[in-house]
Length: 105
Image 1 (cartoon, helix red, strand yellow):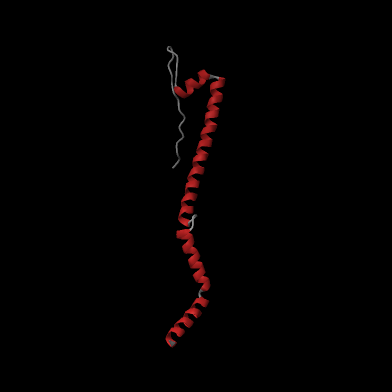
Image 2: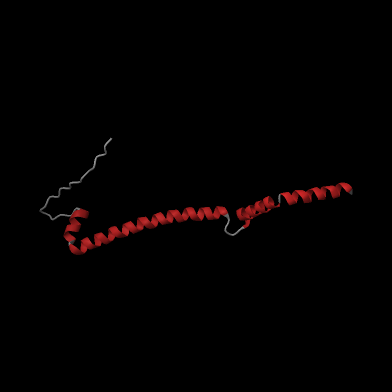
């Protein structure tokens, strides 16, 4: 009987010392495993968000390019067809000259 009272008393003292640690550990366990917005799910959501934002930027650049092409088609469709699709008349020869930049070592 005396031994059990001593164990309970020592447990009570130990609990008083480490109550903040126990509360913190229990909160972390709850956040990791039981919460609706647990940490691994949040990490995957944020990584998915970053890839979607990058995709959004790519689409915005593509939209700008398509608008420029649309303006070119509206202004001079023959020039657009010759430059983009290398079209020519039956009595013409087409020469394609591309500018290349060389990398310096």
